Amino acid sequence: MIFPPRKMAPGEHLTAANYNALLDYVKRITPVAGANVKVDYRLGGAVISGTPGGEAADRSIKPFTVRHHADQWEIYMPSGCVNVGGACAPINPAASESGDDHEDDQEGWRALGLDETEGATGTDADGNTYREWDVTVHAKTSAKILQVDDLNAPARRLVWAGVADRLKPSSSMTDGERYKDSPGDTFSATVARVRVTTVSNDGESETVRSVTQLRETPIDVGDVPAPTGFDLVWYFSVANGALNVEKVFCLRQVTAAAGMSITGDQMTDVTDAEDVYAKIDTEDMTQGGLVTVVADPDDEEPHTTTHFVTWLLLYNLVENTVRADYRENSLNNVQIYRA
Image (cartoon, rainbow, N blue to C red; front, top):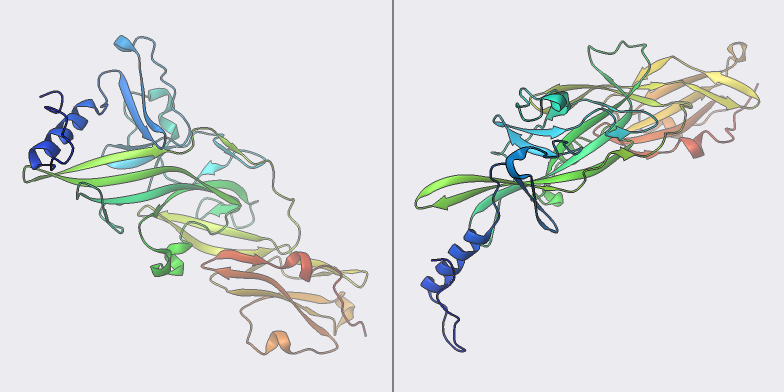
């Protein structure tokens, strides 16, 4: 049968045969990929591209293309697809295979840490169970890779492509789930959406995967402000498809106060801190004063004032993600006592 058998009359009840005939017809007219033909299902509809015979096909791959290939999910992130005053180098490991169809671009394919068996589930109009994820790129412009970048090496521009469960309510998420990919972010952008549906057909289950591409052009946001004082740098590692924060350091501990420059240590470990303070002590002026970065001081300390000690709140962090940066106000026109 190619078309439903007939139109229904007013007042006539819909039968299972009518409904099944309609479903069969919809399946018949739904575009599917074939030889030299590609179908992308997007928010605006299905986009069909291809060239007869495949002789002159456009073999270019768009940035942030997401695909399931060789039993893994991959994203195409070639050099220059994310720029913040310069190209951001991908943190995601290279895909294990890239296939023969795009040999010239295979170095651009990166593995996505998407586990189809984990995540909240929903039910579609046909009663099929599905899971859905957002694919988001996170630009991190003050970052390093553990066991790759030296401790004293300059911070680099890096980019991580992560996945987030779209169906899990935010109210039921832990902070670890909510901020798992965002430490060190300068900005982030969602580039694709993935749905994996389990379809039952004649007593057998079939996995149907679909991708909605939301962005296919490079991202360029200009440059970030030059390093100032008390900047943070993140050290990352990747294990089992997840981005891990190994260390967070506070650098360039220097501030101007009362016409002089007050300096501290080269760096201070603030990993897993919630509140980060600068403590200025001017009791011994022979060294020009001293500033110390303190992570999560005792509750009474920042409120204990003396003639010589000044506390300045620098950051509030959650799961190594900056939730509030107070430096612009705290370090402006610092008032201290000089003996």
